Amino acid sequence: MTEHSTSHKIVVIGGGYAGTVAANHLQSRDDVDITLVNSRPAFVERIRLHQFVVGNYDASVDYGTLLGDGIRLVVDNATRIDTATRTVELASGAALDYDYVIYAVGSTGAVPSSVPGAAEFAYSVAEFEVAERLRTRLAELPASAAITVVGGGLTGIETAAELAEQGCKVTLVAGRSLAPTLSAPGRRSVATWLSENGVPVLEGSAVAEVRRDAVVLTDGAVRQSALTVWTAGFGVPGLAAASGLRVDELGRLLTDETLTSVDDDRIVAAGDAGSPSGRPLRMSCQAAIPLGVQAADTVLSRIAGTAPAVLDQGFKGVLISLGRHAGIKQLVQADDTPLGTCVDGQEGAQMKEEQCRKTVMGIGMEARNPGTVVWYKAGPRAARVAA
Image (cartoon, rainbow, N blue to C red; front, top):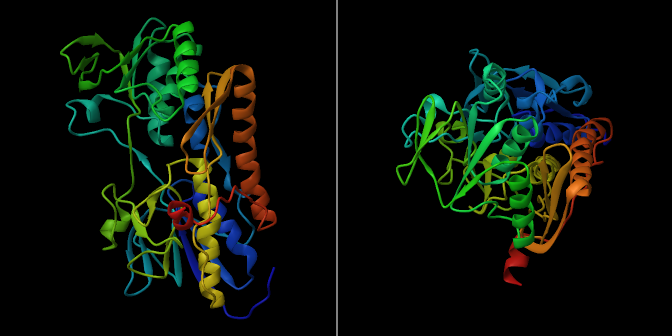
């Protein structure tokens, strides 16, 4: 740790993967006053929420095991960033002064208001509180109840698989296609597991309406559904827009390649809620943790009076769980384009579980020894695009 004399106030908004690791990494200097604002008193392992729903994993971790000793945790909601006074306004009525903000508010499940009944009757699995309600509702249903999972992406696949392994009667409405971000071998592996475990997959079908006990498809078909889980799409909190900062079409904070807001160089984004150069990385834990470290490094560089480094981050693969005994590792190029290679079955499951464990362990290690987290660096994006 470098010793300095003047204190710099840094407020990290959001205590998910990106925000928590960013707060820990800021401890590289001893002259920083770090406050982490989060709506919950515990860290949520969001990549485990489909397990939490069926009751085989707790998915929450005490911040005492993950945050550095000098980091102040404020359990509250940020409602506005006042860039003129450099304060973060909180729902409780309090306000926090800052020299720098790390904007790490994450993402949310997007249940569309344009689909009649979806907001009223469908459940999400993207956040702890809604996953908790889903878990309660699931426990009330008889084993024979028909369940519909809407969304053929990774969250929908993992949720449907976890429910099926528990003996639930699940149908997956995949939309245009099942697992569109995977390679052909990866898609076949997913489809085979779902078929062998009794999960009908409706490809080329979408849900046009959600009812209390049914879903209506775009072709007019009505299918019984005692419980509907909506996993198609993500949104982001509206804090940046509410604070007068420029955002992309989804509401993510627009930044340059150093993750600095295009409107204010004292606000730096990390994780799902940032949009570097209007070309955001895939919303994922894999992206969020390196982004958290790089956002913290940008702030540390500005404090030191040096030029911050540009974003340097690549993808290596996608890990998907299919219940507790199978999984898939889809290898990808640095830009997240899938390769024609994947590992599946029990070996895929072990890889997924190991990575989930290492993720939380890595955050805790960063708390004790800032600079521990490493990631795959593929070179600055601008250079790779030009090449």
